[in-house]
Amino acid sequence: MQTVPSTALEAPPRRCFFHSFVPVKGKVQPYTDCLECRSRCKSIFSDLTDEEMNVLCAHKGENIYRKGQTIFYEGTRPTGLYILRKGKVKVFKKGLWGREQIVRLAKEGDLLTYRALGSVSHYVVSAEAIEDSVVCFIDMEDYRKVLKGSHGLALRVIQILAQAFDRAENAIRDLSQKSVRQRLAETLLQLRRQYDVDEDGAIAVRMTREDLANVVGTAVETVVRFLSEFKGKKMIAVRGQKISILDEERLQRTAFPDGTRLPEGCSSE
Amino acid sequence: MQTVPSTALEAPPRRCFFHSFVPVKGKVQPYTDCLECRSRCKSIFSDLTDEEMNVLCAHKGENIYRKGQTIFYEGTRPTGLYILRKGKVKVFKKGLWGREQIVRLAKEGDLLTYRALGSVSHYVVSAEAIEDSVVCFIDMEDYRKVLKGSHGLALRVIQILAQAFDRAENAIRDLSQKSVRQRLAETLLQLRRQYDVDEDGAIAVRMTREDLANVVGTAVETVVRFLSEFKGKKMIAVRGQKISILDEERLQRTAFPDGTRLPEGCSSE
DNA sequence: CGACTGGTTGAGTGGTCTCAAGTCCTGTGG
DNA sequence: CCACAGGACTTGAGACCACTCAACCAGTCG
Image (cartoon, rainbow over all chains, first blue to last red; front, side, top):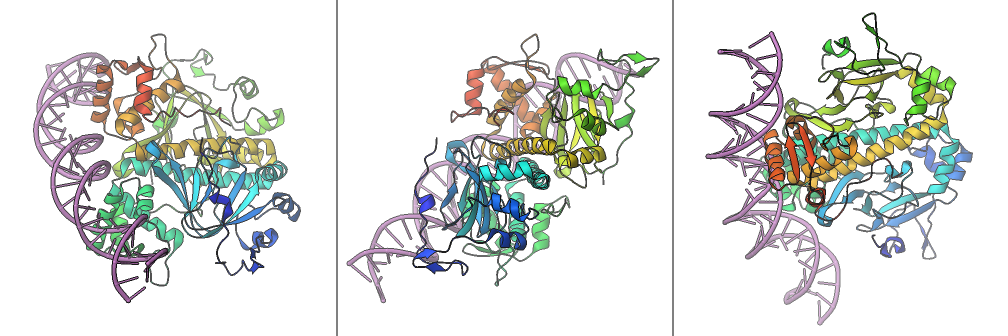
């Protein structure tokens, strides 16, 4: 259905942008040791044995995607799992007339392909780097092999999926019942929690107004108008794509007029 | 947070409404043999051994809920899994100002508590019978025990959750991008697929306009207006709460103006 | 009968979208 | 260095979709 432009896999970065990827004779040193990674990151695969990790990573890939590059396409055959190792990625679905709806924003350590944890005939979302990113790829066959053998992994996958499902259903409720003003306020709070702030106190992610609109589910102009409203009320400060939250309390009240709060992330197990 | 009215568990049906529940001296014969049920129904638990089924059903309950009765409440401690054995149930979340958003409609054999398949501190949805229903209850401890021991079950749960997650993300996209007219048309098609038609050719479920509004995510009056529009265009026929689809083709085009189709149910594994 | 629930219709409002014009920013090439 | 092109952003005007409020109807139950 969709064609996969060759750009996705070329990715010969003009220069290396992560210190851990030292160019060796013009080639980037691509593979991090998975075992080492496992112990560092708290990921789905943290609990696996060395043996299982070796199977899982037998055909592991690790690719660099520059800002704007697509990592995989909705509708194509799922060849494996993608995990974001470094950078920021938007995960979206194409809707009416090709308009995109961003269903989640991934941060380091996040899985990009939840649906593919169960068997599925095609990717149900697309993923694109919104910053230069490093993405690990785990072959589907390897995953299945390990999953089949590891009860611990299966239990872990259940937790991950149940949480993701919960977040999705909360989004359904919010999209259905909240105004754009409320949803934008909530999105800003979420973004700050997810990506934290940089040295200037601004939310540490650069998104276009269009991406923001595609998260909130509205038009670009409407996002601009409400951002400008928030700015006027001194709730936020805006400098280009950098947004700082000045009056969290007020933003909170805008997003949750009934006094509820931003739901927990993954800690609510 | 929420209190549980005593109505939920009383449920002394004035008379027995399923032939399989023969009243014995004023008491309903409550328990169906789970082993027998397993072989008949294609449920999550189809593949378990007899032994595992016995553990799972050690504290099984089977309750009758009359139309309008609540089965469990969002925000309360999860004591187990609920499976709809007979009847129809709406599963919803309370949103702003207590307005309810129906996140799914369950039919016979459906699990009501997806999130509780992973560990969780409280039910994240409520469930209420929209028809007289029989609901099986599986104790959480028993489920955990069996899940811990059965890799096959874990794999099955992963499939179930991944599918549920997929449906939820599709709903996000639709809520965000489609108009109420489109969503209502799509809902009607879904309802017919899910519940089939009765002898008159009408969708075999009776829902109030309010419930319909809470599925679509709109106001009651808006549902009424669009139903009346569809009726005027001879796309549907309406007799009280019974709705028949007359012109599926046209309804299809209303729901999916871009030529996409209603996504598969569970068959798309 | 009155009370109540569910449904329907109308009028008015307002939130959000679309279209159009124009500005700001950034990278590129001369 | 500047000019320029293109993309991102902003603002305004107008239209329209959907919501709210209010009135009213039909059926049911006590």
